[in-house]
Length: 309
Image (cartoon, rainbow, N blue to C red):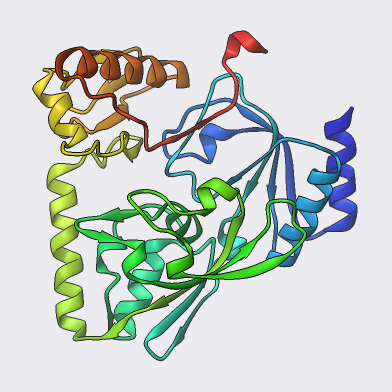
């Protein structure tokens, strides 16, 4: 079986890399549901990541790169390939004056706290985003009027086939709303260099506390979700359109449009990936029928439906 052969080859070439077969992705994604990956691979270093990708490319095996799993939904039939997770094994953070160098698996909350300790301002907006910096730089994540493009100076990138590392400056990343050039090339962020500014620890801490309080008041943080489910359509707010369509609280199976914030789809308990996707379609179709606006998911959706197995 090809999966077994690939697993054996990776274990032989990179003994420090973790490899799991038939890995239930609900354990690794913030929605707490979804199917299994044929292989879940966690490299221990950027060099190991390159080696793993070269093996997978040579074997023509499907690959998806994930970070903290906070913006990902795997369909109930699973992912018939390798999901490569860049996580805590690649999460070193180093302060260099007013710059912060972080490996892609470092959590945004961790980096924001390290910046606070160093008296560096400009990254407070990211403290409550539950993702890792590689994924955030890849998609230009943001919150509360802050975006990664404001802080990123450059990123180190690995080509999707694992053949070469290279560097992109901020102006080369072609940042836009929830977009970078890497979303088109499919290449992978392995390290991010942030340029911040010296600031008052007291003011930085106060700003982070203020944003945390705003999140707690307005977002359903007690339920599994992937944050804001839909991208902001031009000229509108997704949550506002969903609320105006009287869809707050709409439920399909264990999935519900949050009564607290209509832009969130939550797993209220026992939701399948199909429940979430069916609710997504119901919301999109109703909003389009009412307002003529088509909502695009911000969440990355991969894999196959259970009836395709």
